[in-house]
Each structure stands twice: as structure tokens, then as C-alpha cells.
Image 1 (cartoon, rainbow, N blue to C red):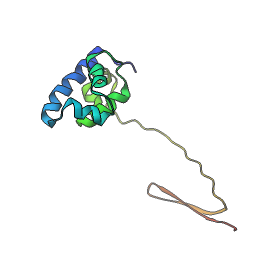
Image 2: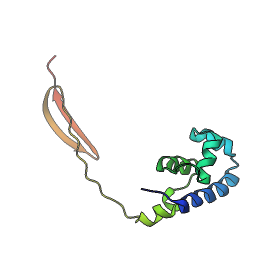
Image 3: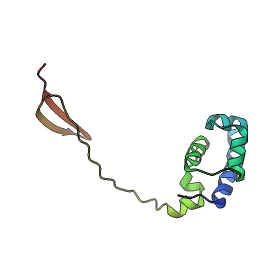
Image 4: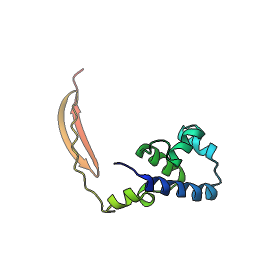
Length: 114
């Protein structure tokens, strides 16, 4: 997903608002994000690429949800719960005797010959 200048402006506005509320300096935030102050400033001001990795860490530190902040993400976020079907396979070192389910856990009883 490509983020644009409108997203950058929104992030900057959130930064200006939240840093006052949280009493955090640019230097502190840079350290939390593992960036130099110069890198942090360049990202917010538009002189460096704006990535989802940065946005995620940045919003996490400010206790805000990216989907509530960035116009690009707001436009693509439906708020609907997405159902994802997954499958896991495991191998055991032995002979399976019994398999059963307890809540969200699958229990496998097996014997192993040493």
C-alpha cells in the first residue's frame, strides 16, 4: 500500500497533538523508534519515504490506531471482521492413539518407542 502526502500530514498532526498530551520530546520518540532525530524529522516532513513499518511503530508508541489516523487506511478499512481459515499439520514421533478437542486446543495422545 502506498502512503501519500495526505497521510504524512495526518501523522504529523497526530504527532503534534499526542506529544503534548504525552509530554514526550522528539528525541525520546526517535529513541523509541530506533531512529536518529534527523531520520525521524525527515520522515514526518516528507524528505524520506513513509513506510507502513514506521507508521505501525509510530502509532503504537502514540497509542493510536493507524486506521483511525491515515486517510488512505481509513478509505480501505471496512471495520468488518475478516474470517481467515487456517490449517496446521504436525508430525509426532510415535503412533497416534487418540485426538480430541478442548475449546481451541487439539490434544494428541501418542506413544513413542525409545
